[in-house]
Amino acid sequence: MARESAAVVIIGAGIVGSSIAYHLSVRGCRDVIVLEKADREAAGSTARSAAGVRHQFASEVNIRLSLYSIERLKRFHEEVGGESGLKQIGYLLLVSEPELWRQYQASVVLQNSLGVAARVVTPGEVRTMLPFTNVDGLLGATYCAEDGHCDPHGVATGYLAAARRQGVVVRRATPCTGIRRAGERVTAVETPSGAIECDVVINAAGPWAGAVGALAGVSVPVLPYRRCIYMTEAMPAIPVFPFTIDTSSGFYMRTEGD
Ligand SMILES: Cc1cc2nc3c(=O)[nH]c(=O)nc-3n(C[C@H](O)[C@H](O)[C@H](O)COP(=O)(O)OP(=O)(O)OC[C@H]3O[C@@H](n4cnc5c(N)ncnc54)[C@H](O)[C@@H]3O)c2cc1C
Image (cartoon, rainbow, N blue to C red):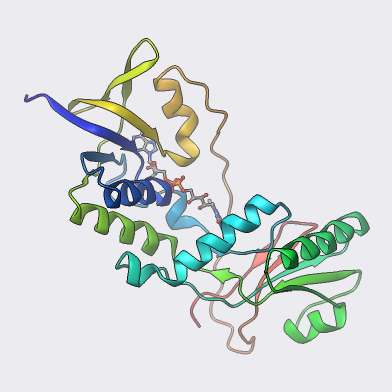
């Protein structure tokens, strides 16, 4: 078998690995191989996500990241060539605990100071936005019309397609099974079809990042954690409503298509 090498090996073709592959390639780093253990790209958390994107966060760094990301999602087709599927249907965060309510109102003040048009909503207004909702015990809600959801699978595959056009190689059904080191430096990754010598390894294995880190003897404190999403049949009587989260229970819901 011929010796194989690459400047950079990315482990995982989810939205993170795909984005890194794209951004490396447009900056001129094209000697890149992406390894994906599944038989298709974006088959992990990325394809299973509820896909919510929102500006409504409590820390300045997260709000700034969201401002940047949502602008990029708006221009995704022009910039990258794929479809981000961004739908700004708004995000409504329902709050019924006094301490949380204080925190959520403070977050709106911070969001507004950074240019995000979030606002506080009364329980009466919530009833108008979500006509079938029981608002008993609700202290209020926060709302931002520019939040919503996107298509993470479309974003990941859009990034990968653009990276491929720049020369990046994507290997499906090729797990990284080992990482070789010489002292502090990585020298190669191992796969069932042979080793790939490389200067840099990027661990983009999502929930499996801990397991991949362990292959290099590095502790990455990430463990897979199962979450569940349920799809209902279409409910034509319910109009389109914002992506809604009950902050006490963590329950959330949104529409998909019609
Ligand atoms: C039910 C659910 C709902 C969510 N809702 C939201 C939401 O509303 N908004 C939001 O922003 N986020 C949400 N998330 C989180 C979001 O989906 C993840 O943060 C994101 O997709 C992580 O992307 P990733 O590329 O890091 O990981 P992944 O998409 O999991 O990709 C990692 C890839 O690495 C591959 N891999 C693993 N080990 C190896 C190996 N040894 N060799 C080769 N390949 C390997 C996997 O097969 C996988 O394809 C949700 C997640 C879940 C599960």
